[in-house]
Image (cartoon, rainbow, N blue to C red; front, side):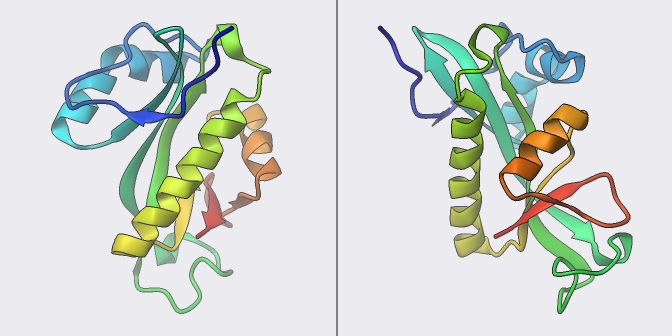
Length: 157
């Protein structure tokens, strides 16, 4: 029996066009924008495979959040006007593999990579824009908290 691979960084120019998680936004990005985002350097894609096919993926990129757009809390305390962060831009698990713990494994890998980025370049948080309430509950389960005054959530790094 096969297992999921540890997420690996996709080579420049390689996309994940055959991926299908059932969320229109995530599927559309995977099909239409993943290869160009990687090629242009606007996102790094990490994918986990099962029997040679993409089972799940996430993207990371550097980011900043305007301090004035967040209503207080640890995120803005003693921060510059543009708070450095890492953005978890897209994440999805193929429909065939939902409920098997792959989402949690992908998120843990994303957090580990965000911590490495923070140590190398400075970032205050891992930020995410949940696609729906189910996604928001998933992120909250792993310690992400709402950024007051926004639709975003963040995990302190």
